Image (tube, rainbow, N blue to C red; front, side, top):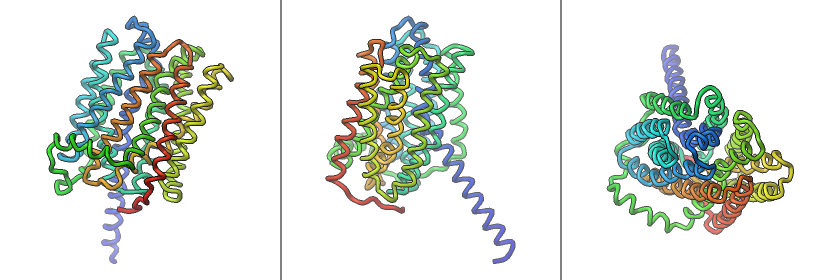
Length: 413
């Protein structure tokens, strides 16, 4: 090979790597919309309650309203992405997210806030469900699980700093400014889409109508293995959103920590998720998706039970909650990415629809988890603790179903 040819080949390789890195960053940003839409305003929940003249349980329903929109919206965005490609639906979703965030910023009552949160969620979920499908477009099997774990590690930066940034914004301004910040994030991501390539070419798109694709969810729900993955991930998400909805009251109201310190304590759990995702990325090809899920479900169950007991008896005070909740949150790294990839394996032509179905189930149980904390709120951490424990046990129960339907997943495309 001549010197000129070598330089040309090197330039192409560097360009490809740079392009791949840009795609990785954008996909991580898109997937982070599931968390930043809530994590950024968590420290402001008590202040919002005072401003809107509502109790803690009512304000926590803004999280449940978001989850309703996020869960239902995915069921439509998935088939749309399979039929029309990934980029156009993501663009439309970002526009809805921006409109919903602006509506939240201008809300003057909790019911109005809940309505705009649902609009915001319908837009945000397009980014998340189709970013996952784009990973499946590019990878399969253990490689897809590994890449999704890496993506989730990168995207964890958003919830890691989200509550702290939200606390800083609250310190400098009001809770309204937090939602105006989300408007800016949506606009910046919309601009970044200009360099995101389409991963689903026309020849690989699903030609069936959107109505037929939505009705096809019934057939997917008849697959026992898919249901096992959905059950594990869904049950765990119920506990995770109980954690998201309950920690502001548990830490700020009950244990009297500042909103800024709350952000740091919440960030500990995100660090655990990042570390667990990296461990999963290294071990999933060796031990397999199902074993990693089972380990995560066991960890979540044990940590949830300890958290419930500590919340009930107030053992250990603040740290009696922080430590077991750290390990519960860390189980995300062993459950979520593996459950999504395991469910999508074998359905490459329906990757968007399967991703949407799994996401809808996960966030649907998240509605139950966050709503339970709000409904049974009594000013103590116990409603959160017992909800987390119950959903952790449910996750472990569904993980047993994976063993009876086990089959190896492909390693390469």
